[in-house]
Length: 334
Picture 1 (cartoon, rainbow, N blue to C red):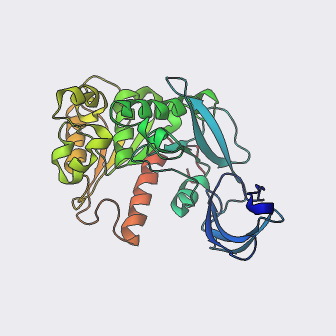
Picture 2 (picture 1 turned 90 degrees about the vertical axis):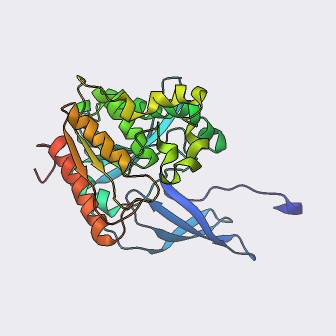
Picture 3 (picture 1 turned 180 degrees about the horizontal axis):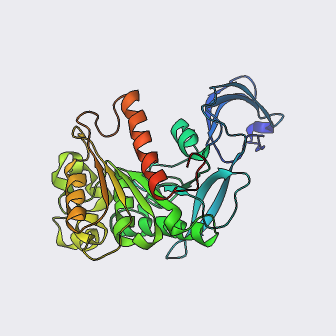
């Protein structure tokens, strides 16, 4: 602006998308902007701050049919009154009858932000077939800066899990789905999250998809990279810390005689970050208590999948589990 002052103007970019500046011109008001969303593959836009206009100039080819799909953003109210935003992706003609198979995902840790992203697997295997997909922006993540992260660590990690459970309740309240049709999914720190949904909020879910998880929080700091996460979770060897950690340790919280939803535990024998012992012990304990457990542990991989073939196998395994549990009779291929 004049005299070196800043001037603010809105750019016409898509809603509910992840947007970033790739490169900005030093001579005019134009910039290259990266844009991606749940329904549109990564694309490159040319934006002009002077005119407020932006246009797509290049995009990756689509991997699934999104013509009848929409993405929205809603809010749930957590146990302490905090409003927790979440994204919801579904067919345009969604019936709010409480009977839609819905998959709820979150991470909620280490200041990692969960923003709209394009997933061929979720699109092809779930959304195209009539499934609903939700992503919750719970505390512990970085969506709203370091304060949002710090509000979901150590003694507040339980609060972050309450946020996720509140989104599950909101999806049922709004009649998007119901507990028997709702599954939760998470990996690593997110595996700890959904492990706690199993043990703390089993009545809100019809299935749990738990990948490369932390589950035994009594010993996590002694296994592989665990000691590096003490700032996030606390130190179980310090009595004051164990008092709050034990309230979010699924391995210790699992109990006989409780009605748990079926769970798919997916780990890797070669995981060099979260020890596969977490998933192994949890599967054994749940089986001992007579619960329905699916367990998968390939010999290859790492903290996640190692190649395209294994990635495809993991997606197929997870979504087959969801179709057999929360999806019966409600998806296009059933």
